[in-house]
Image (cartoon, rainbow over all chains, first blue to last red):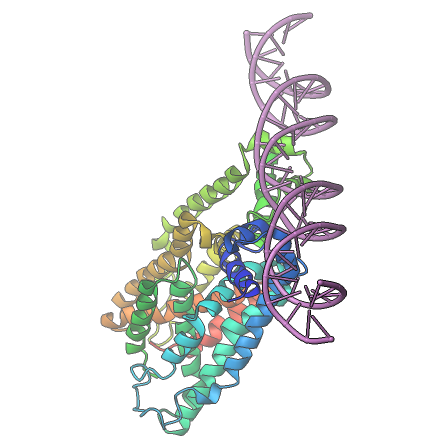
Length: 201
Length: 201
DNA sequence: AAATCTCTCTAACAATCGTTAGAGAGGCGG
DNA sequence: CCGCCTCTCTAACGATTGTTAGAGAGATTT
C-alpha cells in the first residue's frame, strides 16, 4: 500500500466513524505518519480525499453490479425446493461477502449514512446502494427462481419485497452500528437464517 | 420559546444535518441571533447542548413508552378481522404521529444516526429507539390481537418480526434521509399500506 | 433608593483549522 | 556528473475554533 492508498484507508476509517468535517488533516497525517504538506502532494485539498473515496466506491459497486447474473440462483449452482428459499442461502452469502461484510463497502456505507443529510450527491448514492440496487439484485435472482418453478410467477414481487425488508432491517441492526466484529457478523448471519425460517413465500 | 429553547432547537436542526462537531458555536448563535457569550450563560459548554438534547429525548420517549397500552389494538377501539391486520391501520398512525413524523423525534434519530459511530451511549439509545422499543411495542399490540383471535397465538412472533422488518426498512428508506417533507411522509404512508396489502399473517 | 438577580453584550484568549512556499533527498535517464 | 522527476520535509499564513472576563441594562427584591 503506497502513501496515497494509506491516506485514503486512514481517512475512510476516520470519516466513517467521526464524519468528514470532524476529522482534521492533521488527524489523518498523524495516523499515516506523514507531514501535512505531503498529503497535499497527493490530494489537492481535503474534499479531494472524500471525492476520491466516493469515486473508488462507485467503480467498486459498478463492478459488482456487472456480475448480477453470476449470483447463485440459476439452477446450475443450486437446487430449488418449494418453500425452501431461505435455507438454500440463495444469495445471502454473496451479498454478505461482497457487499456488507466487505470492510471497504461497509465503511463507505457508514460514511454515506453520516454525510447524506447535507450532501445530495452522497444521498443519491446512499439510496442506490442500500435500497435501489439490492432490490434490483433480489428481483433478478427471484425472477430466475420463479422461472424454475420455485413459486408462482405473480408472487415474485411480494416475495422480493418481504426479502428486501428483512435484509435491510438486519443490515441496519447489525452491520451499520458499532464496530463490525466477527461476533456481529455471526449475530447477523444467525438472525438471517432464523428469520428465513419463518419466510415462506 | 425562550432563548435556551431556541438554542436547543437551532442546534438540533444543525447537528442533525451536519453532525455535532461540524457545527460551530458561532453557527448556532448566528442563527439564533445572540452573541457567543450569551450561549455560555445558558449552557456550560458545547457538549452540554448535546447532552441536554439527549436528556430531553430520553424523557420524551419514556413518556411515550409509558402509554403502550393505550395504543389501538384492544378491541374497543378497532374491529379485528382475520388477515386484515394491514388495512386496519392498527398502530401505523400512532407510530407515525408520535414517533417518526414528529419533528423533534425525527431530527433526534438523525442526530443519533450520525453520532452513534463514535459514542457508545448514543449508540445504545439509537438501538433502543429504532429496534428494541418498536419491536416491544409491536409485540405488545400483536399479543393483544392474538388474544382476540385475530390469528393463532404461536404465529405472533413471526408476524411481529415481519411487521417490524417492513416498518424499519420503510423508516430508513423514507423518513431518515433528505428533508422530511409532506411528500416523503405521503410516500412512506402509501408504501406502508401497499406493503401491508401483501402482508398476510 | 439601594441592592440583587437575570440576561445580554464587547472584546479578547490560546488552540486548532486547511493550506502553501520552498527546500532537500533519492532515483532515474542523458 | 548533470539535470530532472518523485516524494517528503520544515515552517509558516490567515481564518476559525471553543471559551472566558467583565461590563451594562433591565427587572425584582429589600
